[in-house]
Amino acid sequence: MNGKFITLEGIDGAGKSTHLAWLADFLRARGREVVVTREPGGTPLGEKLRALLLAEPMHPDTETLLLFAARAEHLASVIRPALARGAWVLCDRFTDATFAYQSGGRGVAEDRITLLESWVQKGLQPDLTLLFDVPLGVSRARLLETGSVPDRFEREKEDFFARVRATYLERAKRSDGRMHVIDSHRSLAEIWEQLEGIVLALGEP
Ligand code: TMP
Image (cartoon, rainbow, N blue to C red; front, side):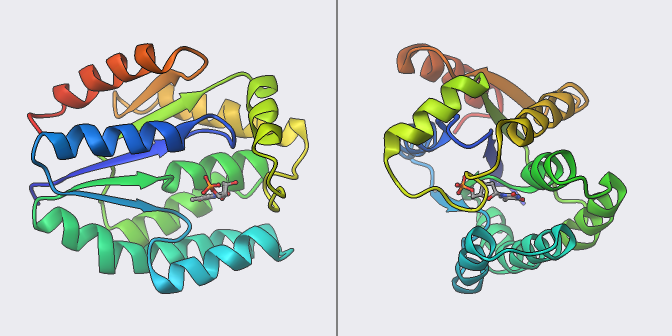
């Protein structure tokens, strides 16, 4: 594999979509093939599972298993083939989200997620993970600003997001440099300057 696998993470309302679009343009301008994708989703089956996950009430174990089912399909049909042909894959959320939301948020045992991770990913990890971090008040205000109907996750209470955020930050500390915490409560120009430095350090795009 000679492509790069970059994932973007953060609590809902942390602003990752804006930065993902910028990063894709930045890499394409340097002549790279860029595949922009997301989880849950990224394949026809994954998008159907996403619709269920965002709307249907379910047990946390069911939720975790469906996320990994979608991920298995995504890895097999989109992510691995793209990396094999040298593309840079930008994925809006990946397994760090499962640790943060399902384990941190919902209380699913971490070792169960670790087990599913090794089954489905077979050792594949992102080369880089950008964790967009904002205080909870800011993310809540941003979600309200969008005016769209909140999904099953966005309707969760503040303490749920506090646990999700804390789990993300804790994972970043333990990630041996894979995860970079981006203070997303700054100007776009400041954030993009930081992103440029981090991405260029990964290898010349
Ligand atoms: P999105 O709005 O960023 O596309 O993500 C959809 C929701 O899915 C978001 O609220 C977080 C949630 N999610 C999990 O709970 N676990 C996961 O593993 C992933 C990928 C997403």
